[in-house]
Image 1 (tube, rainbow, N blue to C red):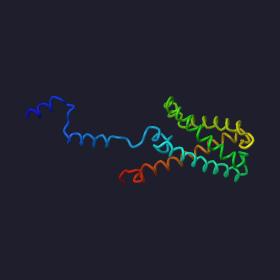
Image 2: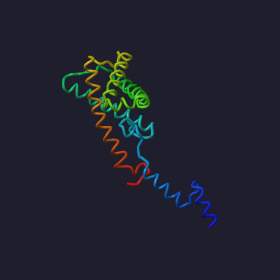
Image 3: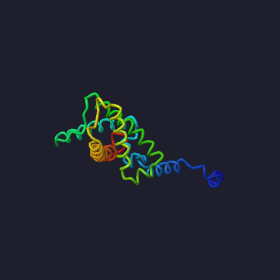
Image 4: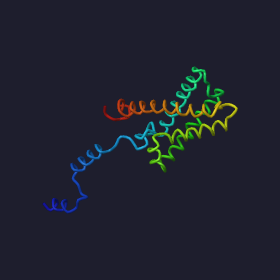
Length: 179
């Protein structure tokens, strides 16, 4: 009985059953994804996996956009294969770094702009890459750069949304959770 009175007086001392119940309650409340993942920036919680997926998506979708432009008879980029690969790698690394900083310091502006700030940042990054690699990766016109950025961003938004849903909802078994 004395032990029971001490337990009532000190709320920090919980029984094993109470601790287990508290842990279960915390697991239920815990959100499965971080803010950046749920807001649409990060593709995966593991940053290396995120960067790998970003590079793969950026490469594939940029090829699609360039192919569509060529198919419509309106080529927008002149490039060599090595220049294209290097430009997409630079875009992925720089854009991820800049977006991390933007989400860290200007999250409200990122949300309120509904993605336009991201597209504007991407246009600036691609313009800088164009200037840096003019011999092996060059947008034919500034309009081509802007069109590429908007179409690429739209395709990436759709692809990233479906990829995120696939990773976090349908196939969560691969990451140690229960289906």
